[in-house]
Image (cartoon, rainbow, N blue to C red; front, side, top):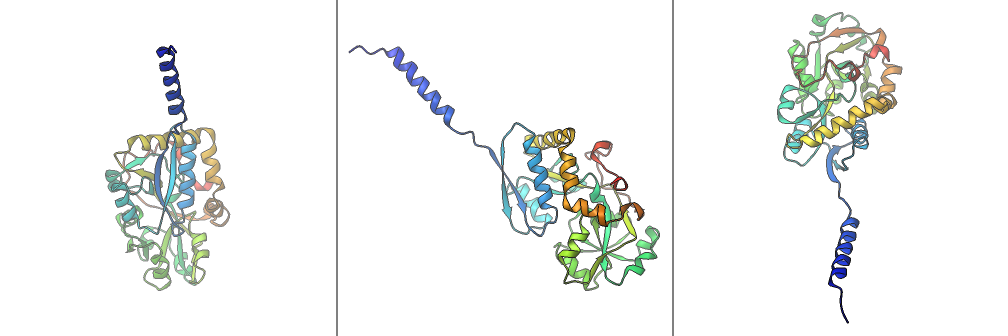
Length: 289
């Protein structure tokens, strides 16, 4: 029997092509930390997913569980144990990791209400300016960008490594107030109902700051992909939809009385030219909410 070598070759090539075509294209896995201890974790994860839904490159998200400090998360990102983290930005952090230049909370992170002890409201009713504010002690996380901002404005800051410790330290009288972003304190007080804490009714500290995504500096494509996806979500309105539907943002609007609070403006000397402060579409005035 005569075998047609040319036809066999073409058949073999076609079969190989079919095999190659049926091999799935594996998406790059992106690891991020999430725990119940992080009040902003689920929102940040939604924004990451929103960004990825708006780009062509395929990524797969993978949660790394456990309660990690910000210092540990930065270390794990530098060591590629994590691929994405979120944090208030600072010059030091931007030198270590690559900034994705879209503020996740439209600047609300820099609008701060105070968690105080029940029965202490009168003490804060007498605060009218930054000089008065310097007479009280404020609690913050050791590695937080806010800590350096408050200290740069001459405020008295008591620090601890772990976020959860701050509620018990406040309740125990170690300091007088715990500044929190306007979307954070009500849920946190409810979560710590065993402690004698409440949200102060009179003041709002304001400085330029927000949560941003960060990745390892070796992952420039990932940073630009996330940025592209978030910009597309801003353009089609889906970013604002996620933002406005966040329960914490709705709670800030309904309970925060943001329009009637006395604003104490603070400088942020840590802001860098990496932060897009001049893009009006990225920032919001809480008085308009």
